[in-house]
Length: 151
Ligand SMILES: CC(C)(COP(=O)(O)OP(=O)(O)OC[C@H]1O[C@@H](n2cnc3c(N)ncnc32)[C@H](O)[C@@H]1OP(=O)(O)O)[C@@H](O)C(=O)NCCC(=O)NCCS
Image 1 (spheres, rainbow, N blue to C red):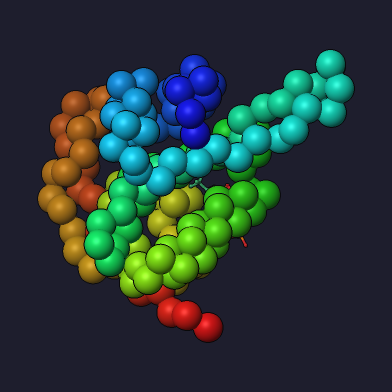
Image 2: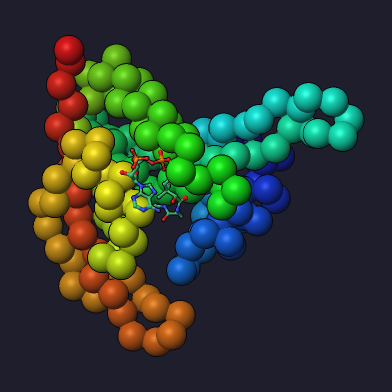
């Protein structure tokens, strides 16, 4: 991900989240050196220019990664892209001796929870009233963690 990607990122972000990141949040992540990646479909011809399909942001610490954002464009969901991206992140983490990845997810976000469970994440905590709701009120966050194992 680079600053030139951010207009498209923000567009997908606004279609995808109850509380979206701002452009400034992504700029801060890039400046902080967080692992930030875009997945693009390459242009086929002038009628089919390249298109942003998905992106992710992970915050590294010494032996852990926190998955801060993974989003797939609504038109490209349920085709295995999130699973593929997170598999690549596991491999990249392992090659740097990072031992686990953790994340927070809204209790209502069934697709994301199913995805993480499929990939071996387990619930390790619950943060009460963690996320704001646009309808007012707050929503709990499930904290999930995956221990990476070198095969
Ligand atoms: C969550 C999200 C990233 C999944 O991306 P995706 O590319 O559609 O997911 P994949 O196709 O790789 O799915 C892998 C697995 O996740 C689960 N899954 C994905 N979407 C699902 C859905 N709508 N309902 C139930 N399970 C789902 C399934 O177990 C699936 O495996 P299967 O296809 O064998 O059933 C996508 O729905 C999204 O961008 N949502 C909005 C943003 C968001 O909530 N991000 C996560 C929180 S930061």
